[in-house]
Image 1 (spheres, rainbow over the protein chains, first blue to last red):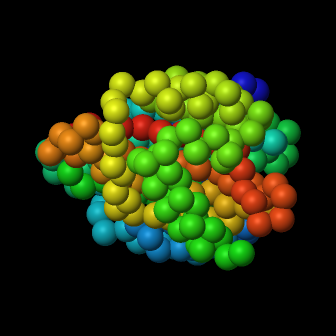
Image 2: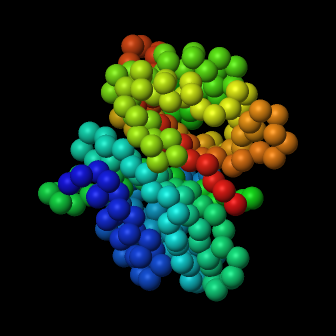
Image 3: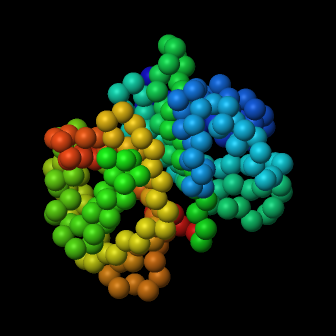
Length: 121
Length: 121
């Protein structure tokens, strides 16, 4: 799969799942995956899902502004900037996020690196 | 070298060099390095240095706001958010940038992936 196509498919799936069924993100991480969320570090699917499940909002909507990708051996590095709205707040917050994806089983990709930051203006 | 220490050393060196002697960045890229700059893609040190040397400003100052890193086999992925001021303009612009660093010769690191975006508010 072309790395740009992979990046697009992954991010569409990731943010749709995040916004509608956060527990469904679990299948994207494995035991060596790393998440750095606003400077806090987590490793492995259970720790990552515990963090993502306990964020201090009920509802969130992500909108992607820019999507860049580069190929890496066995996958891609993906860089997103965008805006997110939480709990119906009309003022979206800017964010940026890096994913590194590696192919696991054929056609399946694991997120091995995930770094998230809010960008305050 | 610890990946956090590597990330700190690299970004300090990178932005100091960018702001004072842009041509000096050449040693950080090799023939397979990739740069995506505001959506434009470049591969290999010559193409990357041509882009970086011809940006539409004379002077620039980068200030790092957040610096995150994760280890990868043989290196680190590094994620920076910050502000930059060009040609003495008093209104800095937010940016975010991803680097993937791989060890080449002992103690030397090459930037294999570099993705840069301005973040307009």
